[in-house]
Length: 187
Image 1 (cartoon, rainbow, N blue to C red):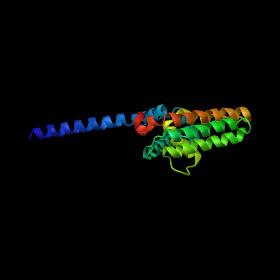
Image 2: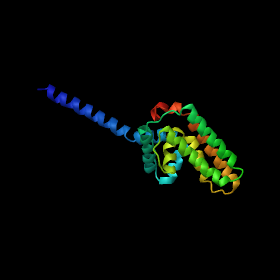
Image 3: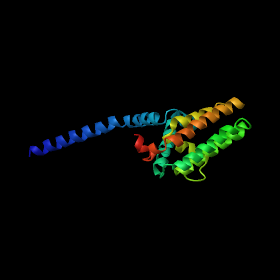
Image 4: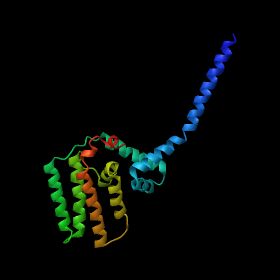
């Protein structure tokens, strides 16, 4: 008879310890998630925070991006297709001298064409595409956004934007094979 109260006491202590462990760990989970997303996305985390206005919504957006990216079946670009995109990009840069605004619009089109050839869905809205690309290329996408949102106007602003797009194009063309495994390959 004396062992039953002892067994009950041990079970209560074990359950209390487990409950305390869970309670202590719970506040840490959101902080860990925030730190992981900040580390992963860098300045793009801050952009999502400004866009959504609160950390919860921003982190849901970033998590959705990770999910979208992991669902994609990306593929490496064959050398001939990579060369075609590089030639398209060179034409965009040459065009800048005569028509900077048109050149920047064409730069967006080159980014979208490369993304399509990498396996992103066709017809994706450009902002949505940038969000998905930010999973693998957060610095380059953040730079494009920073320059676009800079509020400056004129040829110098367009030149900075073209340079930011060039960095994104270089990343898409040059780092493609490293990302075949999806976002988990980077962790």
